[in-house]
Figure (cartoon, rainbow over the protein chains, first blue to last red):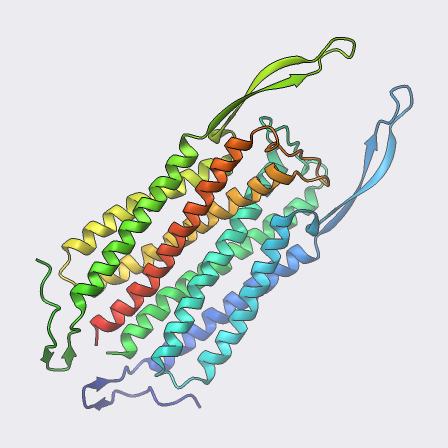
Length: 192
Length: 192
């Protein structure tokens, strides 16, 4: 179906690799993994919401008033960015799968373009997870120097879900790192 | 000095590129740029410190007390991480310059190793800048949902210096992206 790069053909100066189809299969599986992970990470953040009743003291002489307070993912720009980064990476993973699947396995320009975009996805996902981790740490521990109180003692489930999304997102980003290395070695093999 | 990869030599199936030395020069310059940028970024964060007198109301009936408050880079873990990421990237840039400079330009294993490490530097620097930007944005604007007050209205110079470090760091990270692409194309050319 994909053909063209199998068997050990010696054609002039060009030596085609015998494991071309296997390499392509591994790359496709890695892209599928990246797609699934970034999709899960995006969904985990996107559906994250928690409502808690918090006691609020309005007047000292009266008992505290129980007010329902909701934590939503779009309240913090770092989490919005994490979700957007994962959606972009997920869409790109799907597109690059399609391109890898339909290409004849010989296209150096397409290979270089995919390598560049894979590298950009590494940058995008790591900046997103970096941002979310930085905010998440303040959420968990607070920071006394700037007087930012921790909020995860109240919104434990919300914070846990963001943490899960970050972990999945980092694994997705590592998949893209592997794809960069893979693409580079493929480019190298292709041109052998 | 570097020798071996110049002139258009056709040797069996191997075609050596005529512009090997020029490519190496560009790569060295790009590594030097990355080294300089990450060094500047690390220094900008590392020496960042600002003391301001802040009026603090202890008792309502008395006038506010002027207390000197200092902002230091190591008060926020995101800024510590940004500095450490830049120091690692800077050290690696120096090491990889040395390796690129002394290598004979033919070593595919060294080239692949440098490509992998360059990609890791992209991940490291972007996670660092992502974290610092996320915290910096809260510092500039605050966040009413989690009741984190902005602090950059008081520590303007401190925030400005972190922002400068982030900008320089992002340019350094882009230099590493270019190096990844460059390394991949060099690997490809080397094996032609």
